Image 1 (cartoon, rainbow, N blue to C red):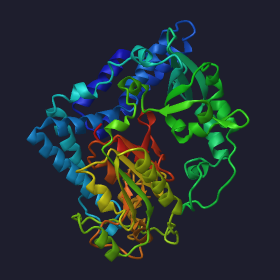
Image 2 (image 1 turned 90 degrees about the vertical axis):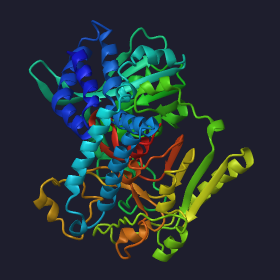
Image 3 (image 1 turned 180 degrees about the horizontal axis):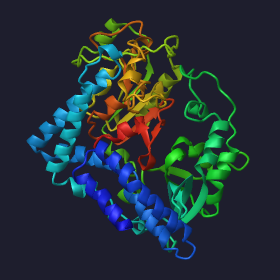
Image 4 (image 1 turned 120 degrees about the horizontal axis):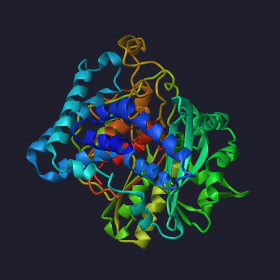
Length: 513
């Protein structure tokens, strides 16, 4: 049955859209894996080989929707097939329309958005069906734990974190267990280490103010966050004992650790976990985050010799006039799609200029001036526009470094699929914070973003400077090797099971590899 569930999971990639597969996994697949993992890990001391089955399951199901979405995009754009590219272009253009509409007041949005979303769904399925190479590109099920072990060095460890509802013979319970699956070069099989129940971690997150509404307090803000302005002292010693202490005994002689997170662990900064009395975990180990430890096989070590250009965004001017933006955008053709934010909670908030970000990009440019011959371009002040950012879709730099403000809103508490709930939000409300799509509720501020955010001066002929993750996910960036998001809340988003965090990081990962 375990093999059958993996087969059905892979098979669904050949004809279902991402939206349909997400629903299919939730209703038909996930429960079975939770039963299998409960059984295998309970019996692991009698049969150590069972942990290897759980590890292989994690490799197959983790981030499967993201891998499939990337595979579709890459396959189509590299195929040279004009009919496929035409279908993809139509789907992408519809996505851009929805992105531009998502921040308008409810009363001013197009009434046919549900129909546009359905069109995108149908076009995606058409692409999957017609793309013959898709199944091979998206199928990572052939990779198993032994392949990863061969790629590890003696002083390296791969850790796949998993979480699942526990099955106790009577049925699935409300207890959600977290395990670390640890793999080293000399292991006969991967080892499974029980960590905690999810309710224990939730309790600690609540104590340290890093629950869903106050998670940004876990991180140090540069300047003042417009959403949360109180800072509190954080005590993460109990989090350390829950997450890392049980694993430590397996890391003797280890210098580099590959981590693939799961569930609420995506809300933890592992590099900042205390180690001993005066160190952090990042002082002890070189920590490499991966969506799946299968990425170790691909050997994605960064190579400076392959860099052709660097784009640096920093020292951005958030409060500007429309005329300033027009002048900065003279060389770009504006899309005519504009977005603005008008929410009572944030109306009095001010996105303050971040002088440290200007110093940051200047230091980076000085390095490349002195140490390398690599070309770079710096965008600051009013020149760091949304049009500038989107223009790189046709000529991507090797490295994007963006130092600015970032934002993320937790999922709304009401059901937005019910029209009555949606309409009672008021005509002056927009959907950055009232949206079922987490990619709409997260983003970055570029030039002019502070002006449009306040709602006091709505731009008509230029982009608004508020770049949502949804907008970014619809851009095709070729040749990007590294994206550095030097901003608050860029690691946040909605956590969805084995798919990880839906936010800015996922949006940038959508670009062709």
